[in-house]
Image 1 (cartoon, protein in one colour):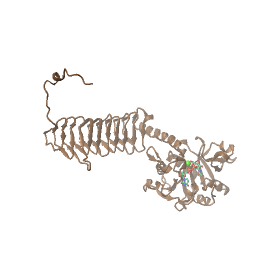
Image 2 (cartoon, helix red, strand yellow):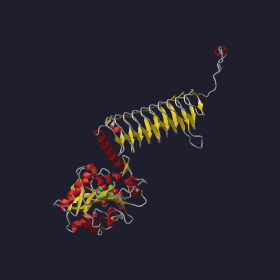
Image 3 (cartoon, protein in one colour):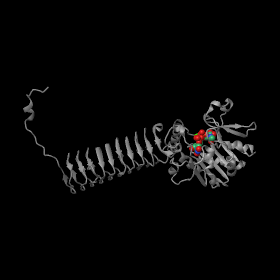
Length: 461
Ligand code: UD1
Ligand code: CA
């Protein structure tokens, strides 16, 4: 929708009910800060200008990272003061939609519908409302006998409010469309409340007194209207956001054997015919290809996983796994790790900043750090790279087709040539040439007749 629409996102509140040192709108919902969900809805709704109202020093502007314009609220408290902070940006702007940064499930459709109603009705202000949420704590919409909006009454402190106001179910969502000039001139008249705040909602009664047209627009999607003021509401909203994300993946061809125990951050990509098992957590910018089997019980963060990969009980962070590889159970892949096509990383294996070649195997009980392992190599159980000398990290190079015996210690920097072997229990400190056997261990000595000699000794207590 190409149109002349400016959107303001109010994101400069104190969020005291969150009891947090992090600004409320930066609390993540499925890994993405709340305010970015609202920003995405505004952009998708076709706004040609989106301005976020922030408070200096709270980190919100930094989180936006240049994606939106920013207006700083430095004077006054409350939603009215918030909008005034963007005065110069909306002066003469025509239609302005005002959104709350703490409504992360807000959708482009709801914004578009509201703005369309506003323009069609040529209203001075259009207020988004719903009767489909628990109204506690929200501003209530007071209608005149003819059905028009009279004013909005805040209910954050319900004690001294009349029962008939508290009985009203229709709430102010905190999402509006305004004619910019009507909005600014009404805001100039908004008085400061006893709490020290200037309420944006007071604009409604001011415009009514001026005889301007006010419209209430019902939100088609009640959850889009739900706000977050405390962490209990945050949990509820996040559960819904998670269900929506998983439903989207499912409709795009992904199977979830236990969707209620799966979490997926916004922005995760999963290919068709991949199955996600119970207890899987997909985080950050994770990408998974087609036909893979992921889980059970794995946590994957900012990782790129190919097609037909099998992975269980694993923790992966900032790494790449190519097609048809097998990971786990009980493997830990740390940043900078790349697992080649068809490679196998088995049980109790930790790999950091290393490349494991195509078809190579690290099947049991290994630590591989700062290493390059060639194609088709097979590291015996408990092969370990000693990559750290107490001061610096060094690399280990293991050639193609190498077979290390069990309990090989590779003391870096060291280079094992292509097709070489190492003997079981060896501590390899010198390079091993191509095709050679590197072995370093004391020779075995057998004591003949030992059992016979100790047979008649008294057992010691
Ligand atoms: C507000 C509405 C209420 C509505 C509810 C919907 C007012 C006075 N009340 O109440 O009618 O039902 O939203 O969720 O507007 N903000 C600023 N600067 C400030 C204060 C707030 O930018 O000085 C931002 C907040 O970051 C938040 C939004 O405005 O994103 C709403 O503020 P909040 O304090 O949560 O208002 P509510 O009490 O929820
Ligand atoms: Ca709120």
